[in-house]
Image 1: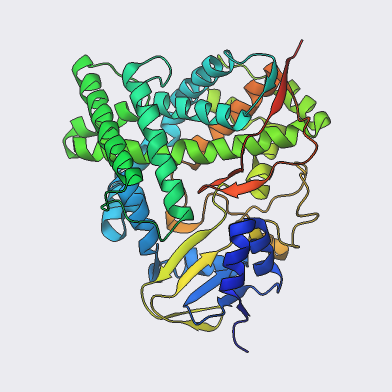
Image 2: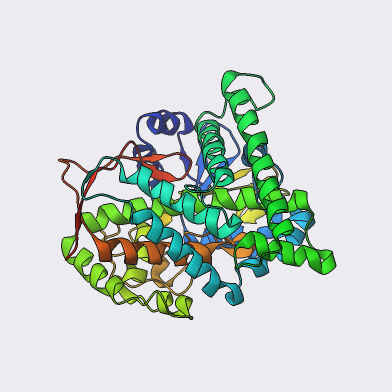
Length: 438
């Protein structure tokens, strides 16, 4: 029996109206692998075992599609996230220790300090767009933890913040308008992006030189990269600038998405919110082993895990076959695009009440768990997200600190609408009411 087909045209038209409708069209057949119905070499995977075969068991047969690498390279330049093969492995091995266990306590303290400064400026009453506020928070955390610069109080940090937002908007537009002119075409949008990119690289380069000249040591990522460079076999300045910009992208956009959906769900589940607030109030931010303390936040950890299941920031993972291979017994020709539907896998019927927010549910210990319940919000295999530990610490700390200080209420008549921009975000604003906890 061949692979069932779905209508790419119908699905594409549905996606222009509502991407959830498009996903539901694909999910309708329940088939683990589906083929686009107009002759295009596109397969959609919504089965965790098939995803494991692509991302782990047969990972060497696949790479990321050219269009994904091209858009990211145009927006961010050449970084770990845009490289492949031996170059990717070399870059990953070079920067992996920066996010290792030995560094996480120092990073956790930086993250907590940035969160405290940001939420300390919030005011009681109606917050018109909590998504915007959380994006500011995660960018401030990223700037301070990655570059040692404050996006609110440091001049170079403000330049990084402002120019980076232009790049992020451009990347979002390109992923949602694949036929838009590439960066080399001098449209007004592209010219603005290229100017912002040049300013951003110059600001990060100045931060690198400022840190080296000051001779100061810190546990932020920039200091750790410079220490590796001083050892004689580390990255060049250009590599450091590029990787820092790449980490800014990976380190704040997706976490802002996770926190936005988490605060919405907690605002609509006041009993769970109260328990989260109580657990957060017990957290001792002054502990020298802060990572261990954060790791022991049982309920908050389960809330974060459940949000990543319901609202994975990356709704899918794209690969293209470098050579002819097989997938679930079917032949896959070279250049076939594989779209692993993470969103569908994590809301499949194998999960009890898959569309409900339930932090007490059981999570599989492996990405493909018993009974077919799949969980891979950070990817799987060799290219699993390098910053997963960083994102986990930030998400848990932010939920603990926000809920310990603020009571959240959602007063709108209908739930927020989801959109892909390119991570899974609220389409529009997320208004929440904030009240100080006694």
